[in-house]
Length: 298
Ligand code: NDP
Image (cartoon, rainbow, N blue to C red; front, side, top):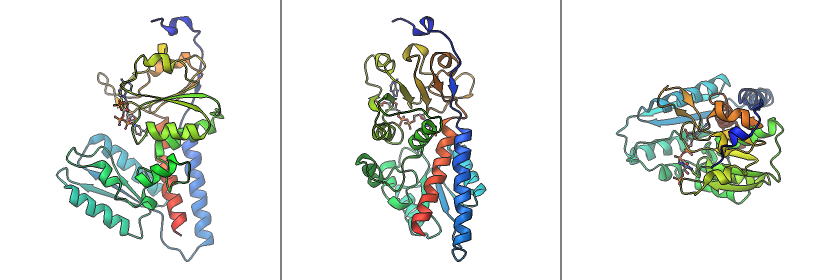
């Protein structure tokens, strides 16, 4: 196969940093919250986010702490429920049901991955759709598929769409290729791109000759969980490359994406960094969803 990297001219791509976009979203939530408090001095309830973690997966630990920190910085009520790894499905269901019934909580997030003896899909379906700030409840995913308004849109794909809009990268009429078909990233990502009038192709582990497809992408979203998987030979020079992956590099232990950033960036028109890209957007979108749920309930 021809290596496109050798046939293309290296250039500086537009760096799609997540920080300015995430900061702007968080600032708009903070401003809306201040205005709400001024206009509703009698309402003492704060927007409340509860994050439930089972076991002590170190990466999950970092994500959970970060989510709680950003929520607190916004002045939200924030709870972390850390449950032991041996927690049963019944115990976890009871915990989620208690949070469903808690009037101080507007968003319930079950941190993934769960230990293998627990069923994520069954547990996610227990969280009330109006408190499902991850947007993973079948009700919310179904509304998203139907092109109607879910209570929450999954945070990572929502963050990708906001990032594209911020950098004025048009989607309508473009060929968007999404690599990865998970319920939490790939599928809702494809749906949002479709709703924005892209022509969408989804690739996955059984897609033959995947590079022949990714090379057609005007917008290429990679969410597979394999460090540095995307190489320049799989990218069209004018492509916008969105790297959703967050992985530990097996040799260096550094945080890296699914895209080989150093190798790919000279051969595309725009690219997200890892870290500093979609991860920041995901957390900001989680706060957005919590805030929206709070507003709908008040
Ligand atoms: P999953 O493991 O649930 O899904 C991975 C998907 O990638 C599957 O659809 C799988 O295909 C596909 N895949 C795996 N290997 C290949 C391959 N060689 N070629 C093509 N497709 C392949 O992962 P997630 O969707 O949960 O996460 C993906 C990545 O995104 C991870 O690095 C994760 O850490 C990161 N992530 C980042 C977030 C952020 O905030 N930036 C948020 C959530 C996730 P198949 O279905 O056929 O098995």
